[in-house]
Length: 166
Image (cartoon, rainbow, N blue to C red; front, side, top):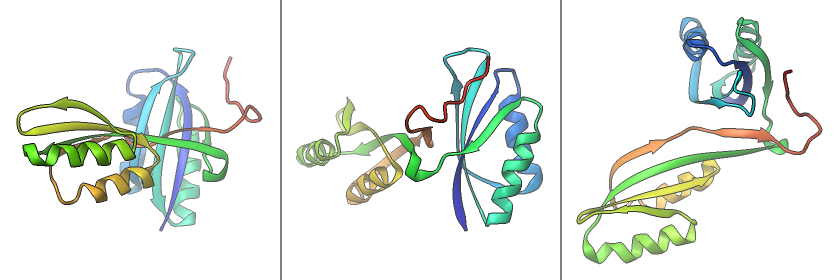
């Protein structure tokens, strides 16, 4: 199984995300993560989809998604020429004697403690997937109460292949 990151520029219309995810569902394709947000031009939305499958399935995904009426452009974000980031919020159950160790690990990863309660902390971390996974591994000894991950957002490096629609 391979993983590819596709980026789409789509019309900012109601139901567009539903139509795209419906295509994946109907065809039995797997979405590992999906993020969406308006671009600098509010008429368009940028969607980043991480999909898994063999090479034939990933090619079909790109072709089928590209045929959807709201999709203006689709392209692959290749790891060597793109920047990827993900956000994670982690709520950890903590005792008083554990707080400093969690703060120290958070500092190493440049994570932010964004909420502290009597028996829990919420930590925010932004980075690539391997950084987030490594952080989670180090927190394995603590009781993780909740996790919220955004999925990957990404852009191509440089200005050579900017995607714009007039």
